[in-house]
Image (cartoon, rainbow, N blue to C red; front, side, top):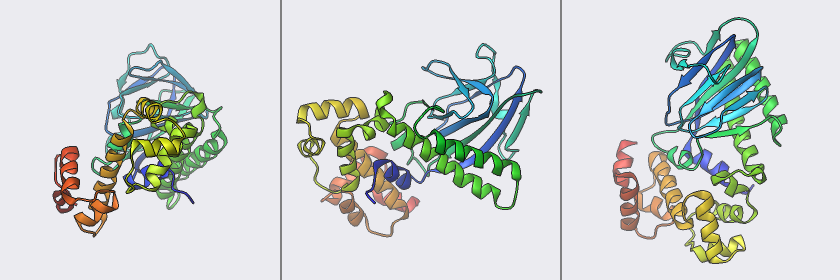
Length: 301
């Protein structure tokens, strides 16, 4: 099976869902949550709720909708005009993963935080917008609905091993949401996920992730994409947010950082594995990107 950029990034970055929460809320309510260096998912199982984020229009989420939140702060509410309370008190650290607010029928929603070891998540979080909605009409809605149903049942069952099962299902939910967003790129999705789904830019991205150590040039990647050098460079930079070779360099160094943390190979071997023919060039690039040397990274790990 060919290695695709999404699988490659999620695998290398070591994404983990560290907490899964469920909220049942009735009546008027609004809760604010601070920005954090994580990826967050919120899914509505029953009813509807508003979600408000910085620099985005307010969004009414209904049953079956899922959203992904980057580093942004956000508010969930029954009414977008309400003054929000501090939402962190709903799910204190080492507290319950279930919260009941108000009375009567309202909304049932689940959430989860996805974190990455050290700063590995920067690669993905830097390229994702603060808010991404996967609506119930999306191409992957059937699969997402099935996963949501299983997560809900596992949380309510409280059976032996339910925490592990719910964690794995949350992993699947995030991948399904990202996969759907990438697949539905023709709906105007911008950024890295949109580039993956673009017929031409996607070919170039798959080539980079498949053969990261190859001596790529802009001209070679443009040829893979079937575009002129100038058009490819301009469209890639606009869509991904980095020029082609800057993206390649950032991914090489991110991959190297992950390998240094868990691989027993030498710095020189890892440098060559990610496409550097000179250990000194690799060390200089690594130090410039991450403010530490590769050997220091190995000692820290």
